[in-house]
Image (cartoon, rainbow, N blue to C red):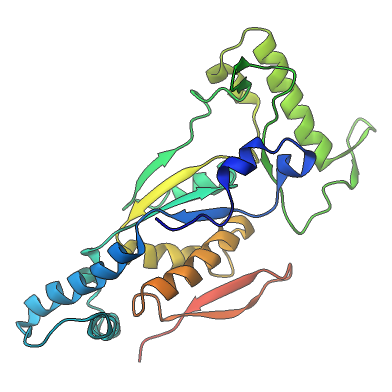
Length: 257
């Protein structure tokens, strides 16, 4: 198993203000690297069955070249003899809402119904628990914004109010499945996604391009770059195309000639 970009256990134990407001999503590829590499060999073996052309030894190098040929010819169905499982964390419910729109995937997501955000190691602690929120890295979340009733409040304070509302409902004996209705889209939520590599190509095409939302694009660009290292040939046609107005990188898929 690959090491996550950050220690999930450390993140959950950290109780300071910086731990509450996160600006960058993280991922962990759960499929072992050796297993990913073996899938390239499987793809070539499956593809050569179509052409009845399996005459030489199949290696990682021949498999990468074979995959490039398949993609160039538009014969991507062969790539479906594969899969990759990824865990995403430090991401918002907005991220997960977009992620589950991809149909050809398996999902396992943190439940706001059954997860009690006031429950600590020794039981519920309604006075000390903290929600985790995902905030835009390009916005000043301490800037005060005037409300229609004349009050001024920062985005950070707005989120902290949501946490207070949730705490109050729980103290009033509301179950987590009822109290969650007050939680914002910014609430942190983990999700595990499995898909074949052809579907991951579609996900990267949609989620690393410039129109993609900043949060999911920021995570997917880093996952794409890691996948390009681990799976030569599969994602080679995705190239860095620039940065947006907030300095966040985006990718484009090269047109095959």
